[in-house]
Length: 232
Image (cartoon, rainbow, N blue to C red):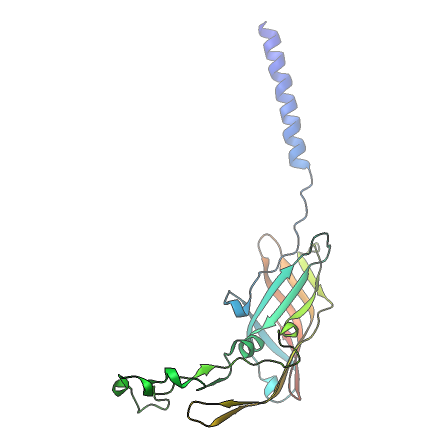
């Protein structure tokens, strides 16, 4: 009886060991390419991208870097993710962080009873409150072209690199705007065109670096000024 019990125990142990060994040698499903999601307009953490000038002159060639936001989408049954890229300057213009004007006089300090406490010695006395003025491309009211859309490989290569492909140019053409301001006058916002053309996008996607590092080439254009940068 004792011998049978020991034999049964050994048989169970051998089977369990075989199952365990098989589980350890079963190939794991590959990890999909990842890129740290960030949306400049939503205020989430973005990449800080360093710009190194390759070619160009003028003010557009003086950029040192800026925040860049990414989003990744994978449609059902699709084998290629879609990515969206939006840079800080583009996001600031759309969000009203670039231009401001006193277009609402109801919140100016001059209309408040405690205005006597305002400091009028500064360059911008607190009697005036400036409101943010978002810019809108009249041909793209929903700002769909403000994002650079493209594809990305589904899985990283053996070096853990995921590559972008077919990335469209992000572009907005802002028109001159004449704003009626609180003092009865008019303030004019300038017309300007802004575009970002990204290429050679490479994102590191590994267990240690889960889509938080990228490199790319960028052609940045503002009106007639164009510059090319390496982005890291």
